[in-house]
Length: 266
Image (cartoon, rainbow, N blue to C red; front, side, top):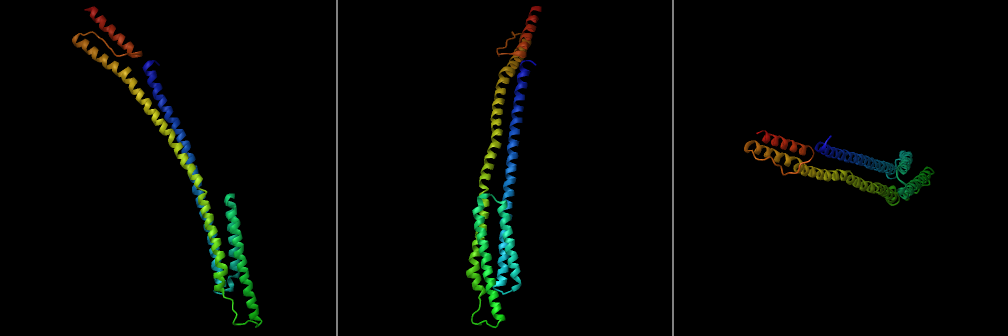
């Protein structure tokens, strides 16, 4: 492969190789971005589902306590206990699924759940004492346990505290996604950067191609065509001022040889 063909082939192959490797780098970074996005979305869904599970468990426990304390439905005693057990299981599952950075939040939530159970046990004991006195006919009708007052003063503050802690755990889980989102932003810039650099380099290479092709290929061909036309029509000497190289230099030499031989033959 000689001169012009070699240069043009090398130039275009360079562009192809540059685009190929920049595309590979971009695909690699985009695959990492896709993985990070999937992890962020999965973590977000997981934290929301975990918090919803704990909130549903504590609300179910609250409804059972209202039935027993306020409405005096003794059939809900076992339900209150089972709801509390379900809440404890949900808290333990959430602890296992969450990073160690939230350990203090889970410790506080465990303590609040324990206080909820302790307050309910006090209620149950008070009701048992009341029922025993009623059964023994020792109950003073002027002294009555007010379940509504107990719920407002004893149970509700502890319940609100535990609910707030669950909401704080959800906020903590959401805040933990911030570093991943920042890393995703950096990965996006890394994915775009190779394409941008390749685009700039490719534009420079194409401009250089344009310059060299115009100077060393197109201009000599135009001048040889014009000079050869002048020689054929007006018998002017064949002369090309443009710089010729490689195959164009050979072509110029051969045309000069043909025109010179034509003059000599006349």
